[in-house]
Length: 108
Image (cartoon, rainbow, N blue to C red; front, top):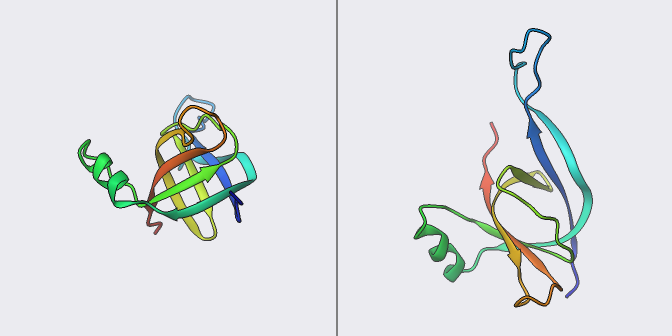
């Protein structure tokens, strides 16, 4: 499978001031930059599977390696931001491709 897109995987870090208080707004840190990926709309079966757990996904993003993505990661693609809802092996345990189930975030 050719992975025609590139994405950035980011996480949000809350920084503290010298008194221990949280500074205004979290800081975005890039975990993986220009990672090859394939971004596509989520399939109906996967959407329904997540809806049963009261979660929403809008897209599936495929990767060629295990990035160990967690729910505190986000993915930037084009001008879009996605929150990771789940991440797993997409090749029945063979470790060839991994997929992230994500929900699109509307930024203000």
